[in-house]
Length: 120
Image 1: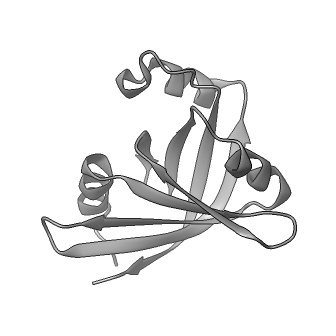
Image 2: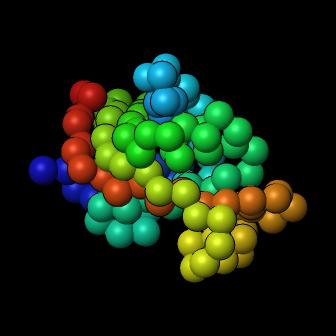
């Protein structure tokens, strides 16, 4: 079992790759820097400039994230489902995040983690 506090620290100090799949099963991967662990099984992502990623989430909820930590020589793949929010509490939360100051924060994505795989 992965220590969620360790994973939270790694996510906090590193960029994350976020993979989604479109309606034709074509993958899309982007790097994210405005990500926050909000519970044991949920990650909050800010949509500042998503286009394909946002469309893919509406077409196919399945996704994966990957994060590596060179300081600890470790990494993780997180598999789950994504839900997009263009209003409500999640959007409000990303709009007040200090990391998003001066950025559009157009939406919020909540990823529900179903599986964590150690890459080390």
